[in-house]
Amino acid sequence: AQTVTQSQPEMSVQEAETVTLSCTYDTSESNYYLFWYKQPPSRQMILVIRQEAYKQQNATENRFSVNFQKAAKSFSLKISDSQLGDTAMYFCAFMKPLDSYGGATNKLIFGTGTLLAVQP
Amino acid sequence: KAGVTQTPRYLIKTRGQQVTLSCSPISGHRSVSWYQQTPGQGLQFLFEYFSETQRNKGNFPGRFSGRQFSNSRSEMNVSTLELGDSALYLCASSLVGLATYEQYFGPGTRLTVT
Image (tube, rainbow over all chains, first blue to last red; front, side, top):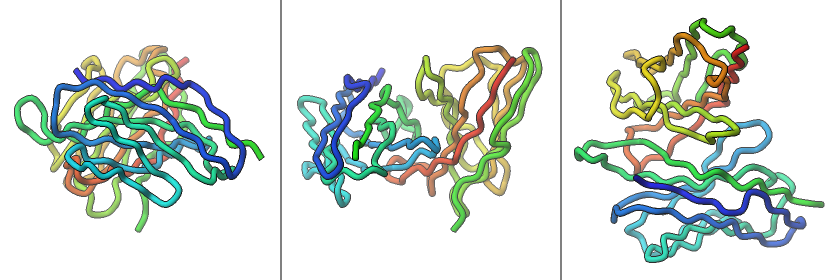
């Protein structure tokens, strides 16, 4: 079974600085997808960034980038130029595209989350 | 384009009752997944529906069930409610239901069981 671990329950960063959130996962699959989701106080879950395991290049979305280390099963999120609106719970999530029977699956496995507070 | 909508947003029920939650996906999306979020267990996958068929199911008791209609709207039902069912229930929709397509979440339904 796949597991996702986020070892930092809470983090704090000053506005305009850079912060890195850690995520490790365990899987025997070779083909899978990794995601970072953001859940602000409104509770609306928002996709931040996605990484396909078969791609060596790290994904980037504006101020958000990942450091994907497939061999180490590590998937960290870097937020540059932190803004007050980045304050939220961040979840790392894993998905394998096919289940054990070869059928398509849309099941996300989430980590426990990291609560990020951006200080003014 | 309207986002994923969930109704009701808040619900208070008594132990032993049953409840039905509704999710309307983004127009054109055919896959709807349901998740339960609690402080103790975190985010857990309940089930996924694609083209009116349950395609995947998480490790939840049979009291949790769902269905999807021809317009892709989905409902989940919890029978014989227990205190531990108190949670935020999130649904997510995606275009085709493949991992290559992003999942978009609704605002959730906050269920409180007393």
